[in-house]
Image (cartoon, rainbow, N blue to C red):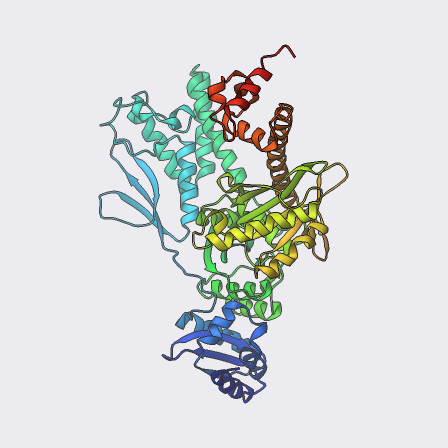
Length: 610
């Protein structure tokens, strides 16, 4: 322990065993972390004791601590209130910070005879009409999109009536989501009527609009205007479908916020779905760096951070897992709301489905943020959790051995990058030292692979890149066979086997200490199966090719004077037996090691009656 840590620990050990807030500062006296404690002495001294138990991020924070202050409070609740206030004021680097970029949204109405409705985040002095402001950009966008589709208003960048009949209609017209002003087939009066209905819909008068539309539909039907009646019927049905979507998701709770997270590559996405009057009225998401706390502690911190910048606290908070100090958190939320707040962690039923929907939303946002599909992020994170990996296995190498009764033994290496086959990185190995020993062959293949890494590690690609995870086709035996290489090359790469059942289907993942069942993990099961199938296909294809060449070489050795070496040279030069048969004596001499006399023998061999 260095002198600075000893000094800080000595000071920490002199703190009282009382609740309070501690404030970590760097050399410039800048606050870098604020925390609360039931007992200041016990909590703060932990930072400056053994450094082996700390996560990398905590270690980094501790390295930057030059000194600390503390404030004693009468209770842990007071400590929490003070902690939230100080974090909001100082925004310390190592606390979980949710950046509040939530601004106001507006409904913008532009155009003259053919008006356009759109959702915008800013108000400009451009002559358009702005309705708002609204706090929820999610609700504004959802409502405007619904109004445009239901009443078939245009949302393109054309200007009407200037651009009428100037170009072909877009896709929205052909899928019946736009009335097609550009075609000139809709009058100003008819469009204006649809626009007015859309605006009333946005003002919350959907029921009155439906009544009017029904009256108009009946009149059109009585006047034998069946096409008009059909269009009005479609509008009514669309409004009804939209209302059905907005119905109560869980009838027993009409006001709640739902929290769920997704994590990938040390980035966490926190998603919040907000419900009132039985319907979703807002959706928010935040990205922040994983601070490697326990999930329970992280939930506590991002909930306090979120409600430190939001005034409206609902009567129920629904979470995707347990939270640290749940009673204390509930007390703090109740204080902010002025009424009782319940914290719920559902295990089944409609509320659990609601949490899953929120988690899917977090996955989708995180996937877009990372430039990947939500399915890929989900399966790699599930695999990381199942195998207990530190990081997401974005770059996976998988190995298999293939041979026929010990002959023509080969190894195949396939790579999965971001959950997909990365074929440009595939490699093949002809086994040199083992004929009928899968364990020895696997050891040889990985020994050669890591030997190549030592030569190319400065390149960062191909053999010059180490994987996040290695999967071997086989069980614990294959894993144990290669582990000595980890010490030889000083590796820190997780390695597991892929175990198949008697029907050659993926059954489990083999670790050094046993097996991990994956049957209950549908996404992981499917992914591991695809990896195992791909490495087996690639390895056996190479083996078949090599075995076929061996058989061809064997047929050439029947010629007097042709051994295995010259047979391989002929096949290397001509590629096929057919090409060798059709070659003349002079062409045969072009192959390495083939003299004129030997070329004549080969030529004569393929031209005898035998």
